[in-house]
Amino acid sequence: MADNDHSRYRNVDPLSVIRLASEQLSLWIVWRDQAERALMAQFLRSKCRSSDSIHTRIEGSSVSIFSDLMIERIELVGSSSSNVSFLDAEDRGIYPWALLRAIAKKHPSVKSN
Image 1 (tube, one colour):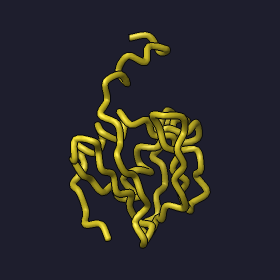
Image 2 (image 1 turned 180 degrees about the vertical axis):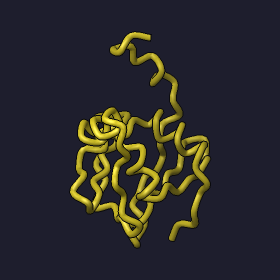
Image 3 (image 1 turned 90 degrees about the vertical axis):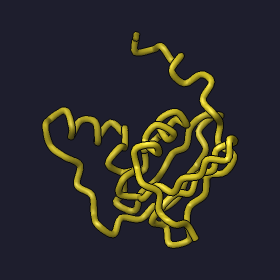
Image 4 (image 1 turned 90 degrees about the horizontal axis):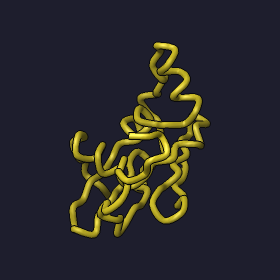
């Protein structure tokens, strides 16, 4: 698959709801098919695809993630992604819906408030 081939993002079930949990430790996602998932901040940060995070992984290091990491805010990016800003100053974590759906399947859900 070519780097510019975005066909893997087609036909992804769009989000119905995405919100920051009140304690700011997780995102709560509801898909249009009614599947629900809460994703912890640390887990999302470990999957961050910002240039700094990718560079760190390419160098063979792991991204430092605080145990009490919180999410500062979420913003929609276009019609198929969200930007998640963390309180550790990482504010370029863009997560396409397809990526969120894929990682949500691998991550145990947590209770949301």
